[in-house]
Length: 229
Ligand code: CA
Image (cartoon, rainbow, N blue to C red; front, side):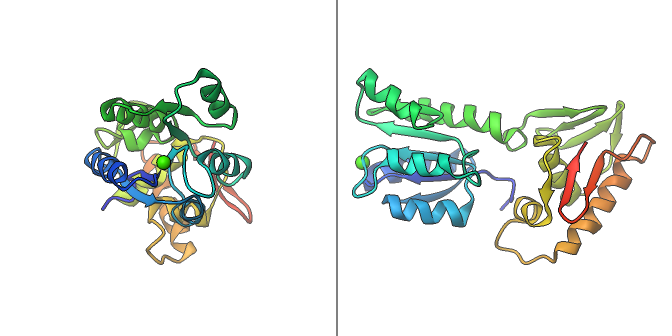
């Protein structure tokens, strides 16, 4: 399993709906974490660090709206796009859903095809390299669909780990990543890797990026980690 595979957290209390959506999301190539209740959802947000949430409005106990509010109020999780599902078609409810910070809103009964399209739209925005997009930073181009990297028009040779590392850095140029965050993204949470391993791979990435000249684009942030630019 590729650790670049986006994780979708599905929160839906109706089992038939949960099964249909899990099946379709997996068919799209996503890893699915499913929760039946709001409490379970909050645990999975912390454990799985999902790339996107599909969240039912009507849940027992803690409502979808409350979950949405909590996720969007926490600086650690507010970047996670949320697509709300609701049986309510009233315009006022739709506005209320979006006001709580939901990124999109789909009314039940929805078309699965349309929901999948909306999931892809959100992920193209937030996790472009997992969706086969082409990214650029200064004279560096990363084509995640073709799995190739170019600098000043020259094709570079990167190992798979260096490629994932560069993909992560290029999704948010300027952002400072801690070594732990990079480990999560590049190796995944389930694998134990010493944080020093990151330094070794950053060294290899720099060497590959500078193979035909050019400045070192990967900045070391003392005591923290790394950033691109
Ligand atoms: Ca429900």
